[in-house]
Structure formats: C-alpha cells, structure tokens
Amino acid sequence: MGKLLREKYYKIGEISKIYKISSDILRYYDKIGLVSPDFVGENGYRYYSKKQIWRLNNIRNLRNIGVGLEDIKDFLDERNINSANDIIEFQLEKVEDKIKKLTELKEELTSKLENIEFFKTFKDFNRPILKFIPKRKFLRSKGNFKQDWEIDFELKILNEKTEYDSDFILTNNEIGATLSKENFLKGEYLTFSETFIINDVKGEIMEEGYFLTIVFRGNYKESYKYYDILKKYIASHNLEVIGDIHEIYHIEIHITENEDEFITEIQIPVAEK
Image (cartoon, rainbow, N blue to C red):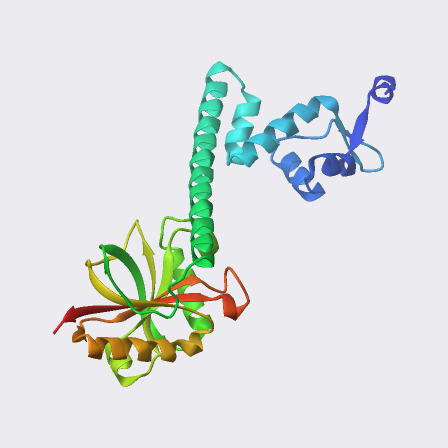
C-alpha cells in the first residue's frame, strides 16, 4: 500500500475532465476490458495511474479516425510491428480522405463566395436575356409545391442523394423549382411541379438549348412581374415556349434572411416559331 501512496493516481472524475470523456464511457471501457483502473478504493472510487494514460491517448486518437472499439482492443492487447503498420495505413487513408473532403469544401466555399461577389456587381437585373445553356444534370423531386418551406424541405431530401456532404450554402449545386409550362401559360406562377438540384454527379440530363432568362432581386411572390415581362418578350420576338420553366435560387434563405437580398433567375426554354 505504501507504493500506492507514493505514486500519483487519478480519480475517474479527473480522468473524465482531462480527456473530456464521460465517466459512463470510462466505466464501459472498463467493462469491456479496454482500459481498467489500477485499483478500486474502499470508498468505491476508481483510480488510474499514468501508465493507463497512454492507452487513453491511443483510444482517443484511434476513435477520432473511426477505428472501432474491437479493433482498438485487439491492437492495444497485442501490439507489434505488423498491427502498428495496419493501424498507421488505416490512419493514412483517413487523413487522405479528410484532405480530399477539405479540398472539395474549400473549392465549394470559393465558388459560393465568387457567386455572391458576382451578384453584388450584377448589372442586368430585370432585363430579358436570351442565352444558350449547355447540358446539365437535374436531380428532381416531383410534387405540388406552393410554400417556400415545402420546396426547402424537398431540396434537403434531394441533397442527401448527391455526393456532397455540405448543405446548400456550401455547395456548387444550383437549386430551384420547376413551373410547368401549363401553369406558366395560365399565369399561376407560385405553384411548382417539382424541386431540383443541378449538379455534376447524378440526375436526369437536361439537353442544351436556348433559354429566355431574367434575373430579379427580392421576394419570390413578386415573380409575376418578371414572368409578365418574359411573356411580352416571347410574343414580340416570335418565340414559343417548348418546355417547363426553371427558377434558380442563386441567393436565398440559406445565405440571407433579408428577402430584399434574394436573387432568383427564371429560365424558359424557347425556340423560334
């Protein structure tokens, strides 16, 4: 007992505080034989010595990179050159994966920032522009959507089907909703037949073609003004609508809560009559 008194021991609460691991988890580690206290005092307190600290360090580091408890236990119980080699290779794979994801995230953030900066100096608001748009991939969710929150909810679900881990504010994806040609012609501009995400990974291919577009700033409920502008342009330039209409939300609720800062682009596929 004299030796025990001369050594420095830590109570389970102290270990929990140092490693930011709950006492319950430490008790579980003891139960499965992963790391056990050096002794339990007469008062029932668990005491850990410094020789257990290296195990907790290894456990925490290995858990942080996704190694399972069974594999950690096997490694700690029978450490050798080969098992260390396997663990290090596993760590390297995880590090490479994290680097890849961080690089992708950096590219997404840079792209999103460039997009915001572009629209800060954009000069062609409220003006019809006929432009050619190359092929794109649309990931779609069909339905009948009238409320902003309905569209946002469906977009959240769609985002899970892409290869992106980030939310909309951090991705290169363009998001939006589809207005059917029928509703456009009837003037029902706030009832949408689907939501979509335009991305490079998966989805139905939208063929290239000419689109009559207009970019406007402000509340979506003001969109009727811009649809009317586009209808007049179509009529005066001998064009016809050849498909459903897409609303692209460049700056939206995920970026700003100020509706005056919302930026939406309407894209109508057209052809000469």
